[in-house]
Image (cartoon, rainbow, N blue to C red; front, side):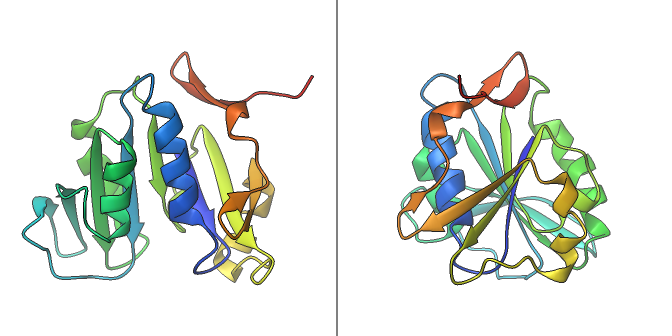
Length: 177
């Protein structure tokens, strides 16, 4: 799993996830997950997959919508799951529930601010912008675990996308020669 978090709102998290999906989906299926601490009403374009008192997991079915999960589906993800949680502790339950929907050899990209506290992913990226360069306190504790910081500049990132690979069931950042 590749986890993407951000230093705040509008720092390019979803745009970065979509760029990765566009690139990877050209050669293989990729699953995308968006985890949010906010509950929204489930729309007719979403399918309820799993529910508990602490979370809801829905599968996005509308690739033409304006929601982040729709953007991910439109970018080329094979399946997109939108997760709503009451609290960070529910994330462990969510990952266990989601495990039945993907294969271990598939690339998975997850947009989440809290997931890195609970699992050790293949890679952990944090998006930031010049307007919001500082990490939130809950992310600051994870600073030493960040594999790559990515600066979002309008519609561009300071990361060379060609360096990111999913090979032999692992996410890798190729080193420059």
